[in-house]
Length: 290
Image 1 (cartoon, rainbow, N blue to C red):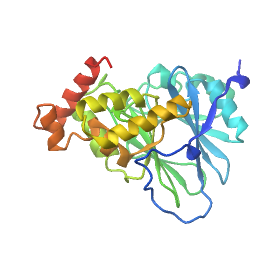
Image 2 (image 1 turned 120 degrees about the vertical axis):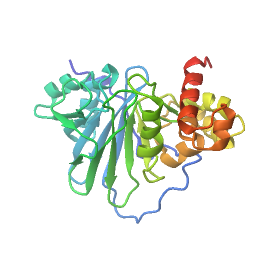
Image 3 (image 1 turned 180 degrees about the horizontal axis):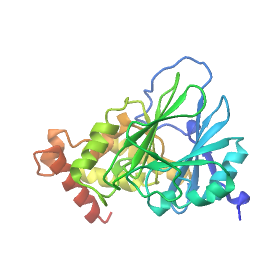
Image 4 (image 1 turned 180 degrees about the vertical axis):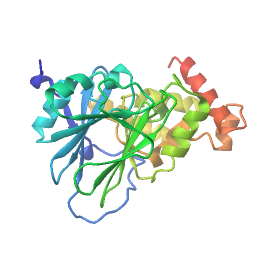
């Protein structure tokens, strides 16, 4: 049964920005096309609704609690057309079959190398999907957490792009290496995602930011930007507000997993290559009990 009364919706475009994100790309004051709404799911998951404000066409990202996402879309007048699944884990793909029942004919996209439940259309790296006029979704293969993990890069004329990173890139962290290697995670984080424009807004799959920043300070205790962002993130959570989105620029300043190219980071963890440093920091995080 659909639980219309339990839907939790927050429009992230209006969330207070991180102190590091104040310098965004300046655009003209023409109306924006892209609206992004998040729906809290399970204990700490985020599903997202991406809306083309011109047509009302919308995509749901990882709608694990399909009824919540369905009613969220109804409340904002969005017309769900597609589902974008980042990877096959239940807490991301577990609502696909139900949303297909709620929205007959909806297309469910997922990576061709992942066994995504309910998938109707498989994606390869570089595939593009339109979402109404002036909006485009680009599939980026970002393997390691799972073999076929896909991040979705969304562009709209006249505004900063957004990327939906599932469990590959978290705010100040990254996913566990369940089905891949440190080299794959380095390519996914620092090359594929790291090559996106720095103002790109980052929407990840879980609210892990405070813990991730606390760990980041064990790697770089003298990183003032990380300390500032941790203070901000704690305030957000105390106010029951999200810490998302971040930006690619923010992550290069505060995320230890995306700073492994820096000699000072390699020196701090006793390594002399970025991939080795990434593996060392991942092991440190796995053993951390903060």
